[in-house]
Amino acid sequence: MPSTYDEFFDAAKRLKAHGTLGYAFRSAPAEAAGMWYDASGWVYGLGGRWAKAGKPQFDSEPVVKAMTRLADVYKAGFVPRGVDAATYRRMFWEGKIGMMIDNLAVPTIVIGGNPAMRDKVGVAPVPFESHEHTAITSFIVINAHSKHKKEAAELVRYLYSKEGQLAVADMLGGASVVGTGATLPLDASAPPWMAEAKKAEAAQTVVSPVPEGLAVKTTELKTVLSDAMEQILFGGTSPADAMRAAQQRAEEIAAR
Image 1 (tube, helix red, strand yellow):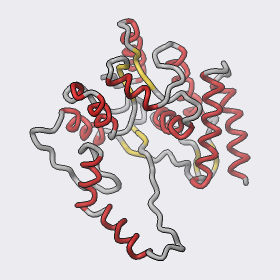
Image 2 (cartoon, rainbow, N blue to C red):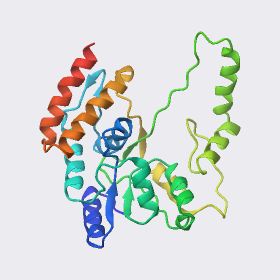
Image 3 (cartoon, helix red, strand yellow):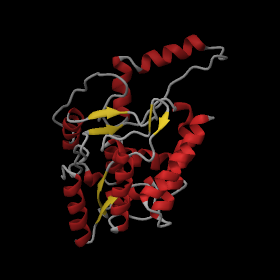
């Protein structure tokens, strides 16, 4: 597995030469949320952030560099074009795509689609400079007007108990707990990728792609990014120009 961006690009190039697409990410504009997470892996992999202290960073050097890399991979023909996650994950288990950067529930999805992939899926750290990777952030809240706040709190407490965390991990195929440092037992029957996933997690720092200081504006900012990606991938706009325009829109949203 590649451990640097240059190695990654070379691997994708060699895969293409053998008739296999090297990589896949969401490039369907309707999947704005998914495009945000996919792009975040590249941005944060260079140490970039969408925002700092409530100030958008869409045109910062690491963000523009990350978007340039994504555009280069896309324009080189290494990826399927205009696809959603369901499509490229299916293509992966069909052997049509060589690499993905995705969450740890995906190996289970892949194996569910093609059981023969159980011992063939590999997991490795993201091959970017900062050794940071993003994790999907989900907020669990209790409605202030609920008639059953106490019961809802009990459910949340259960989810974060050791028993609850193991249950969630089992639902995700045994790869990872969610939200705590609980450890998972690995037995001899576990597929190889699970041990690889643990090593990959230990080698990286997990960060949230929720924009710092602008969490409540995340949905609007996701649309700003998906529009910029559409201009870069489909419209021929340079990443620098697209992200400069995105920065202006993001600043207007932040100021509201």
